[in-house]
Image 1: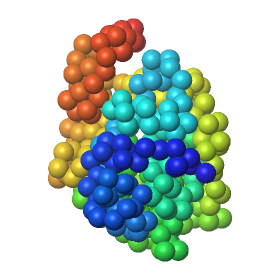
Image 2: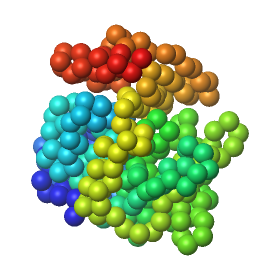
Image 3: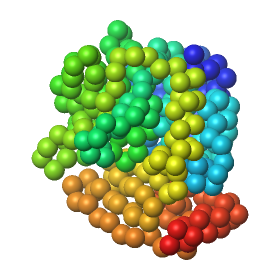
Length: 287
C-alpha cells in the first residue's frame, strides 16, 4: 500500500542515523537485520523524528508537494530537507512496510487551536505489532510524540523524556492524543477508526498546500520535537519558540535577514542561496 518496495531503505536509515541490530540478511541489507518488533518500531520512530524536521517551505515557495515515495525520498532523504505530515508519515509508512510492519493510515482533526471543530487535515499512522496497535506520527511538529504511543489500552500514560502522552477514547470509537503540559492534559488531535489510504492524503495535501485558509499557506512553519537534550523548537511566521526539557518556554522574534541562518542552526535545513533569498523576500513582503 505504501510502496515500501520502492524505498531505498539503507539510504533512509543512514539519513535518520539509525543504528539497529547487525548481523543476518534482514530488510536493511549491508549487514543490518531489522525485525518488525516493538523495539525496532520505537527506535526507527525516535530516530526519524530527531533527524527530519517538520517544515512547509515548499508551500511558501509555491512549489508542488509530491507524495510519491521516490519524490519524498529525493526531498527528505537525499536532499536533506524536511516536510509536513503527509510527506513525513508517507516516508515513515514506506519504511515500516519495507521492514515488515502492518501499517494503516488515519485522518485526524487538530485540537490545539481552540474548541472550534476543525476539518480532518492531519495524517497519522497505526502500526500493528503482535496484534497490538500503536500510534505512529513523525509529522506533528514540536508537540508531537518522539516514539509510538499504545492504542490498545486507552488511558495508558507514556513518558517520552520531556513529553508525557496518553490516548483517551470518546464516543463512536474516536481516539484523542493528549499531552501533559503545565499540570494538565491538552488535546493534540482526534481521529476515528476509519482507515485512510495514500490516495486520501493526496486530497488532504492539496487543501493544506493551496487553500487560503490552510495554516501552511502564507507563513513559515518549521518545527522540531527535539531529541531529549535539545529543546523542542517551533518557528511560525517570525516567532521562534523553545520548549526546554525542564518546562521553561522561551520566545524571540526572527528577523527576515536571519531566517536562513536560523533554519540552518536550529533545524538543520540548509537552503540553496536562491531559495534563501526568495524566502527572505517573502518574509519582508509580509511586513
